[in-house]
Length: 74
Image (tube, rainbow, N blue to C red; front, side, top):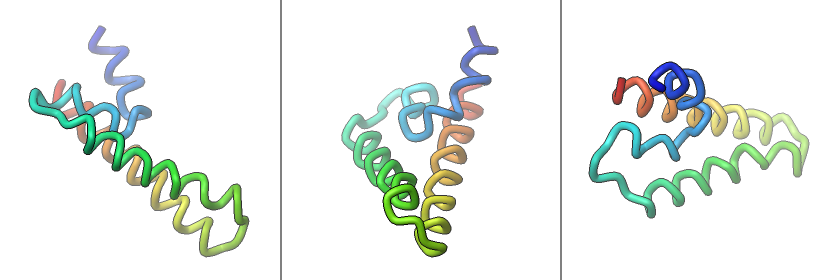
């Protein structure tokens, strides 16, 4: 089971918070997840260089949160 968590946990982004914290917050997970999903979807909706940069930052932040939460719990 831990191998599956380590493999797929980072893709969960902010929704991997229950892996790391006992007192996780659903409100924080969904608020941050909604903001990041909005940033990620920005470039496909309006393809411009500026939105590409914002989408890239949103995607990077998504995976870094997932990495942090996943590897904190292992």
